[in-house]
Length: 348
Ligand code: PHE
Image (cartoon, rainbow, N blue to C red; front, side, top):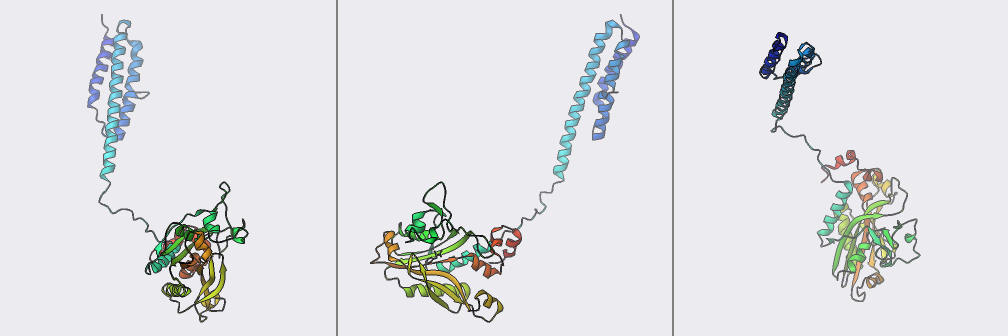
């Protein structure tokens, strides 16, 4: 037995379900309209559900199934249309991407003023046969001090001047590049002709003129018959190449590892305000420490001091860089501020 109300509604829901496939859902707005029309809180599925109470008892089951089928079909259509729209949107954005357009320019790097200065020094010594040697920054006391003839009670060994590694007795941050002298002499045989650039550390208060971390270049030449005159000529050549200095002078000095020892000054003159300031009115600017390798140092490193002799020198890099590039404060060299570095993009 069938009822007109039940039959009509059943037929209508089936028709709506079949027609649903023909809906045009090609835009975001159409998708939303579809959702509201079929699945919204006042949508068709909900409305037909509510009609259930008008359906005669024996048709309720069939009616329920038909409305459920509508709901399912609407949901499926909604999901697939949504997915299609998403794919289309992604394709549209890829199409808008012009792969042939020029890229965002990357900022050009620049050499650090300390690196530029170091490289100039290295290049000068390489031209006369010195090879670059390397050594550790965290060093054993023996290489930094003992081998270099620095006695136990020397003030440089004091905690005030040297950073010691607390957990490793006998280890420290090297205070100079002279540790490389000992490293090289204990492992190679003369002739030895090396320069050793690198970082060194001293327990100093940081100011505009000095820093607890800085760079040095060490030089060492050991062979038969190496004399003080060889050292002087080598350093004169360096001063002329590096600074265009017309002359140098060697002032007597003291280092535990060289004997005799000297400090080398270059002649800047007193004709400009800047040169008078830099040289404190003398015309001479101190550049490096040097001397003949103390025979005891050669022996400490296993080199026969009756057969071989040598000279060594060591210089700081930062102050040369400050002067070379007119930088007023040493701390600027350690701040990694690209505004400083950018200025040296064409310094080579
Ligand atoms: N190591 C010395 C310093 O740090 C410099 C130096 C090196 C002097 C080699 C003489 C020979 O001051």
